[in-house]
Image (cartoon, rainbow, N blue to C red; front, side, top):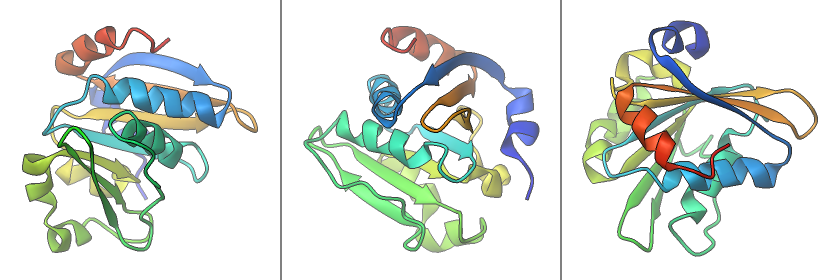
Length: 166
C-alpha cells in the first residue's frame, strides 16, 4: 500500500503540527476542525490502526450535534451523520476495501451534500480533491499522538481561525 504521507502530503504545505496526550484531546482537535469546516469539504485521514482517526471523527461530529454514536465504518464502508445544524457528515473507512468501492457508494455526490471524512485515504489517491485537508496521525505514546495538517492556502486561513488548535 502506498503511504499517503509520502505520496500526497509531499506536494502540500505542512500547515500545523500538534501533539495530543489523550483521546479527549484528540476529540477536541476534531471539534476545532469542525468549527472551520463547511459543506463540500473533504478531509483525508491517514495513520496506523489505533492512531486516533476515528476518535478525531467522534470529536468532529460532536461539534455539530448532541451525542451521536460514532464508530468506524470498517464493515459498512460509510456512515452518514445528519447533524442538528442541517449538515451531513459522510464518514468513510477504506481499511477493508479499495477505491473501487467509492463508485458503488456514490462518493462524488457526497461532496455536494455535506462534509466527507475518509479514513485510510491513502487507498484513494486518485480521488483526493485538490482543496482537501490532509491529516496524518502518528502514535508517539500509549495515548499520545502527533497530528500533522497539510493543505493549501484555503485551509491555512481556516486553521488560523481555529484559535483553540494549539
